[in-house]
Structure formats: C-alpha cells, structure tokens
Amino acid sequence: MRIDILTIFPKMFDPVLNESIIKRARIKDKVKFYIHDLRDYTSDKHRKVDDRPFGGGSGMVMRVEPIFNCIETIKRKEKKPKIILLTPQGKRLNQDKAKKLSKLSHLILVCGHYEGVDERVRSNLADEEISIGDYVLTGGELPAMVLIDVIVRLMPGVLGNKNSLNFESFEGNLLEYPHYTRPSSFRKMNVPEILVSGDHHKIEAWRRVEALKRTKKRRPDLLKR
Ligand code: ADE
View 1: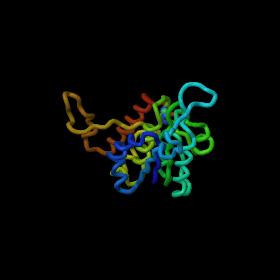
View 2 (view 1 turned 30 degrees about the vertical axis):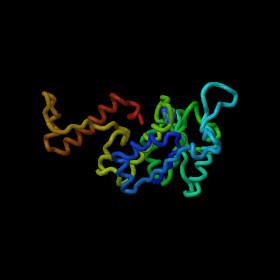
View 3 (view 1 turned 60 degrees about the vertical axis):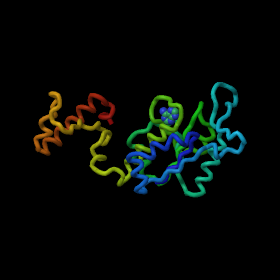
View 4 (view 1 turned 135 degrees about the vertical axis):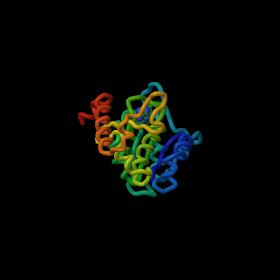
C-alpha cells in the first residue's frame, strides 16, 4: 500500500512511522509513506495555508489551493487513490472500516486544522471523511496516525502471528478474553487454574465465556450487532 499524507506538521509523523510494527511494515515493503508539507504547495511568498472565513467569524480556515495542488501532483503518479479527510464531522472509525481500507492499494490522508477545511475540499475532492471519535483534537495528524496504525497491522504479513488477529477484540463483535503470563502467582493474585491445566478444549471454552461476559458487561451494544 502507498499512503500519502497532507499536513502542515510533517515532523509529527517521524516518530510514529519509525518505530515498532509500522517501521517493520515499511522495511518489509508492505507500506510506503509519502509525507507532503502543504506549505510546499502554496504559491504566495508567505506560504499561507490558512485564511479568514468568508462571512466573518472566529478562527481560520485551511485554504483549498494547496490541498488541490498537492493532490494533483500525487495523482499524476497513481491512478485512483482513495482520498480521506480526517475530521470530527466524519464517519466514526471502527474495525470493519479499517479492514476494508487495509485492502486498498493507495490512500491519501488530508489532515485538517484550525476551524476547518474549505468546504470545496469536502465536496469536490474527498472520497470519505473519517473521525476517530466524538471529541475534537487540534488537528487531523493524530487521527491520521491512528488510522495508519489500525490499517497497517491488518495488512497480511505485518503481524508475526496470524492468530493474534483472529482472536482479538472486536473480532466477531466480542471483546477479547483476559490474558495472563508468568508468574502464575504474584502477591497472592493467582492466574485462573484452568489456564495452567493444559486442557486446551476447556481453555478455549473458558476464553469464549469470558469474552462473552466481558462484552456483555462493558459493551452490550456489540452483542446486539
Ligand atoms: N480532527 C480533529 N478532531 C478529529 C477527530 N476526532 N477525528 C478526526 N479528525 C479530527
């Protein structure tokens, strides 16, 4: 997959793309990132990426021109990328959405800022608008990183153990069962006996029940699905 990121804070992405699973995915050539500083796509001497809103009011609006300019240069290299605008007004991200996106070959992520992005970006450029939750962040960079992280770990061959994807939270609309590792007893807190019994059928059944109990208690909305 190729992922292009349009941002006014390109440096924010360095630490996230250069650590852990995402770094490994890059080294394995599963994903390639292209980070575009929107100021490089302005045509005025102050390299302005925002301006005052028509009609007045507080705050600044991200300008349409640098975003269009940037995407037009990207499109020359690739045929039909999916353009996603990160915004609190978008559709809420979930695991199903991430799975669908992880199968595509080219994403362009537009990170909004200030009071918002010129509406012409939404109406004439973006294929989708995605929000990572019902709260407002200072910009779309962190949401873009969240989206990247969710998508990259779903790509085939990125995580070491395929099973870890099959049994994780939200798979089959269940939260995950509880995990333990050594020691089996720590300050009188003991691991459930069944997990050290060696009886794999019983362990599987226990995990299923625990996943159901946990989901019922914490996220009954998932069970209804
Ligand atoms: N930009 C600011 N807040 C956001 C959110 N919750 N999701 C996506 N983009 C955002």
